[in-house]
Length: 444
Image (cartoon, rainbow, N blue to C red; front, side, top):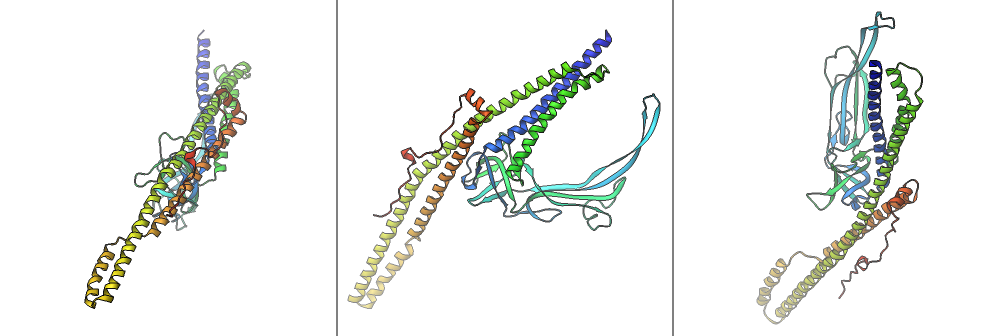
């Protein structure tokens, strides 16, 4: 009775631990799959077209005052380094063999001890063909590139350049110098939460606890996607293998039996597959809902930019008209004064003409340095910037709308989209009267 009770308790404990492990494995797989789909879903934005929310951008790392890495002495915006020393020792241990006798054996242990490590990061700008975007890398997941890596012995000058001047215990007198980071002008892939800057009217990407991902990588987008895709399949297959083999291990430990428990293994596999399928289905459903919300957000961004154009451009036109009118009136008055001065100088004595000149000089000095040319240039720059913003917002909407429509029309997303009543969204078309371009006509 006691043996049967112990066996049942052992089975329950073993399967409880197995269930927990399989749950964690399935969660790791789904987490990798969710990040892969997120990167696939978010279209790449230009730095000039970054709006508030989760965005994906690409460009080069630029900085006004870059850092200098410790080992490579290379200009960068982030780096981490470590100096470690290798050790090796022989250990003698006592163990009990299968016959119950005490035996001794020796084995070799080795490893690395860190002597020095550190790193720094600084705010930098991501630059593409449209402009600059400030990046605050604090708390981001950074995937750097290798800047420096060498393994040297005591005869090398580098050996004592960093770290202790005395060897550690059981040292093999070999030191490893490693450094990774983000060099200046390096092509980057960044996904993170965009927000409004506090100092100027511009966007920046920074850590947000609510954001699903904040990644700064020196790898291209397709490589990052493949890495998360491999994680999804490897974790999933590992869970299947674990669910199939663990019942045999539990039986061998509890009952000391070598036969394979078919029924418990099938039940375990079934439960794991069901759990994994439910999580996978929820991932796809939530992903489609998230995409739908992003489509609506992208459409609202277009309306915001169109409203900005509708309100801003007429005001700028009125300002330039005012500048033109003001400059014209001042020039007219000055011309009249000069004409009067010429008439007075012709009819009267030279003293009277000279007396009139200070009036003209005083008016000239008080005339503000306002030029209609400058106003026209500012108006032209704002027109170009506004139309560019609208074009970027429209392109972003069409990109994310295309991705959403593709998801809704391909298997397996199509089935869940149909169940949820999600339908394809038409691409952007100019229909509303408020979306007509502003006509600028300064001639009178």
